[in-house]
Length: 153
Image (cartoon, one colour):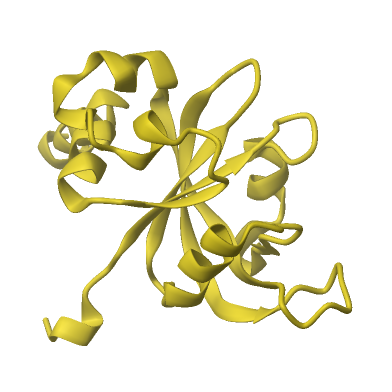
């Protein structure tokens, strides 16, 4: 794999009563704009995203848990919810749910996630995830076990 082909990992936060995992899944393969972000750091992270990058879908507020995996389906473009050219967004599509949601408390209790942006700055709505954090959270959420069982089956 070429250096430019490397997949990066992200986390997208949404209040489930505003936009939930089920809403994202309902959009199907076409996906949906991750619009309405009005934070420069979060916008800049979206500008770094490439088609095929993966992200965790995180329910904020009461649930505070990673509930699914999404894929970037369109790179940064003007946010259709504003005429202000400063704001851009990406499109994402649902890939698969986590068999077991991974809560913020579980992340905070795991020493290997102590430096994760979610643990250190849980208010940022779009944030990077390091590859080792991604792998660990996938295991915590039951993805590796399910894939192993499917391979055996």
